Length: 220
Image (cartoon, rainbow, N blue to C red; front, side, top):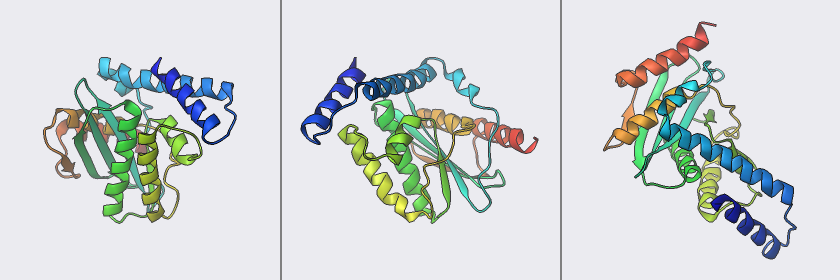
């Protein structure tokens, strides 16, 4: 019901503020897309093992590029953000994670991507591919003319402003195996402090999944 009300409010704003005639079929598609995305997020809260059904193949970035896998996770009282940075050889460069305040799933995903962009900018990496699960949010980033709520609009605006640092628009990566980032997000939910791991000090649970992801790729 909340998704429908939000879409009605957006349609009203389009009509009254932007003088644009809303398209009913498009509104229905927006509601359906958000419903399926939210269903997926909450199913992982109830059945965490479902996260292991990620596509089995991890795909490396092009030579001299960095891949940044981004994930947000939620429980009943908070959310957590996680970012995994890889090079084209399949080496983990950094894994970052931290607890975030409780918020709607799409807002948590947007916050995770903004944090990832900030972290990558601090590393002075210019050629980066960002990958994540939330296709609906990627669509909003790549099409800023589409209406959204004001919190997401603010987060997306900050992301787009920072993205000018990169050589290419970094939000076109196709989703493949994201299991290491999911594990890092679950680890962050249980942690009381932010963390930054590198290849030499990964927790065993995260290291095992990272090795499995890379092995599935380079063994092909």
